[in-house]
Figure 1: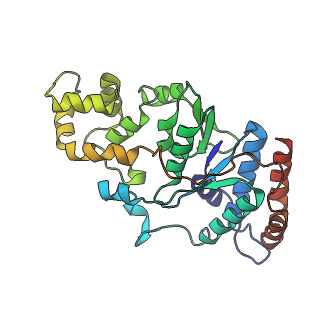
Figure 2 (figure 1 turned 90 degrees about the vertical axis):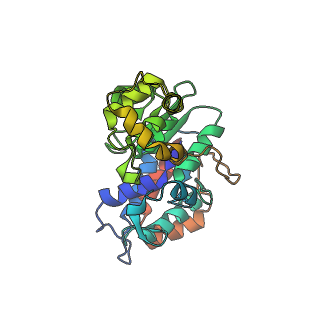
Length: 298
């Protein structure tokens, strides 16, 4: 089980009141929420391996070099992401709690958590569950392995299971072509413009007709006219520079440099003394006890 940890702690932060505080009055809503999310996931899904993936770089240089608008609307200043002031100090606490528990926490310099997930999925020999609220990771679903996304849009207790059939049913495309579809459609939440004038329906029709973005571009560059919805060929030709670089931005990496780590789900804390200190300092006894109980029963 691979956790898109930033997606989860942002969800916890916005879903739980900031009035949930530590003894010193500092907010711990995201910390408590994430701990309870992990407890629920372990209890209901019993993974044998669990990884909390992190953003070492939320806006990697290679993506910005290709498409300068990539996540530009979320920049606070310089290369710093716009994050609520009450959440910033909680991220360090989350990292300390995960380390004390012994839950693998992995990141790769110059890459996002999505890329860590893509790399671990690529390396995995068996089934993989990816827990995220980010549609970008739909591109990894693969029924043959199987790889599926447990999508948090309806909450951690009401996860949507995303497999190839889900992708086909929702978007009308072959189940493993989400990245190609998203490249054409664009994604305002990530600052990806897509092809001007090509919306979701046209993008789906194009990917379904040609099978992949690569085949579509071969047809476009080869002068073919058949199979292009009315007006779309001109729009695609005008966006050729974007389409040349966008696939590498949209695709999650499968080769991010990751350190060696024990991914085994811990049955007991790696550092009990540190965990007790963190529980006392931040008032985390109840959620940590729930998580420890879930780990002990896994």
